[in-house]
Length: 150
Image (tube, rainbow, N blue to C red; front, side, top):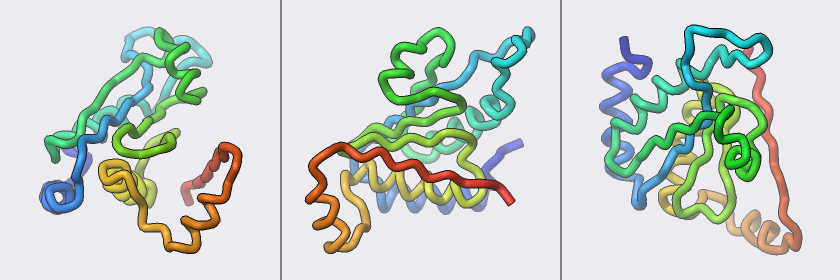
């Protein structure tokens, strides 16, 4: 059974066809599925997140999924600022790094869709004043947005 409904899939196909300009890679850090469970290293949401991302990238030829094993590729993960899973790194025309930690479900799914468009275009919908303020930054800034399901 699909995670994204047929109606939503069609809407996203149309939306991506209109909005995506350049290719975007979704680098997904997960845990290899196994029948063995190692206490303290289980990822309860990795399999569902993987299925969701597979469905999503199937909706546009401009989206590509690159699956990485967090346990065997720890050095690469660390270089990308990934410390927990599931994690998604968006790579396209963006200047900085966009990461999602956890399952992009609920309102976060809409945020992921908009970020895919922004990363594909290499721009955002920020107002001119916000762009001016950000252009004045002289050191790297790390912004974290925490979301709590209700």
